[in-house]
Image 1: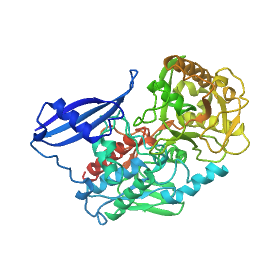
Image 2: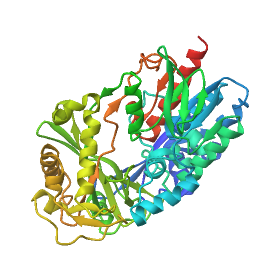
Image 3: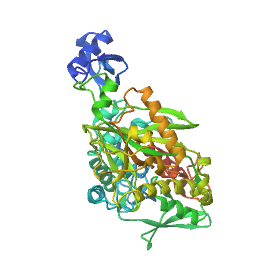
Image 4: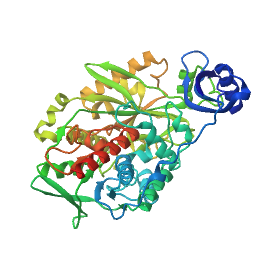
Length: 519
């Protein structure tokens, strides 16, 4: 028999297996001699009171032993000689689509414009230290996609979109710790993700799939309403019975290509704003009510949202103990993002703080049709670059100066390596965006006393929260209704937002491809 109990522990006790076992057995009201095993199934933190506690859900095995599930990949067979399916993009959506295709007995052939994770590091150093942006290899493009260098946050509210547990198990089978199966807000860390991503590649290749890097898709083989393949690097044609398009939210050239081919795309709402960085000790003090964070407590996080002048203002991709990084995908633009390492032990906390941008907010760009949001996004990013010195130094203000429309004389220490420029963000951002951000920050300061402070800095710009373009698909078949055999997938298609939801969308699309090929 298995009895599930919930227990509450002080942080100093929460990682002690003997204490967890004893507390769980006591709560289960069973004899210790009858307990064969104790397994943690859920872990979260309750910091609402003066003293933070861990809340644990524990399975107590009474007169029976716990058994480990067989690895998912042990059920795979070699698919090298099976039906080929092209996947464009080696991010979470593309890689998890590939794993699902192998499980279904189909052979994935992946193409990614960027480099593998190891080679990609050199280009990340170049943008961090020298301000040189490689348009094919950066924080967004390359093996693992943007998810490889955005902390590996695995929390999602998309529980109806797919099998979260299966996705997490696959990550564990490829090197993630089993903690992600239990933590309420699991994360992996940008230092560990590259190895996990490389392990997934090895699995795909060992079971007969293929992965091609430095393979920029420059055309789609599309005739009589049917997608039959792709053209790579303007010369190599590759054909297949189905094409999964999993290119991520920053592959703007793909949107232009589809439009040129007469394949329907749509403008969609997105969000745009800035990245806010605080000292982590300040956020810990506000969230945990402690001057010094207690042992065994992780760096604290926050989630904030409000309405300002009819639009939502909200924190996004919060990185406790994290770093702000340059995420531009082309020369001549400034884009920033956040990431954390597995220990989340940086002295800084950062979060995107953004405003919802609806279709009616894009009227100044309506001459661009379906690309109105994309051109809106680009214009802000280029504005930020134009205010600088030609490097990846980011326009920055102290939070109080940002709200009060004044330049900052100096800045506190920051994690952003390329550096900062005191620049009038209040003029560089569209007026509606700035006004709502300024109001939102003051409201957040009321909700979370101490958030609004001159110790925080505001860095421009956080503009890649999601794609401003959607590639529409049938909700049942997952296939584009204009293009037979073309399956839009993940964040770039407008159907996901984060590693887990993108991975699950990849799995769902792979299943849809299987149904399509079976007729």
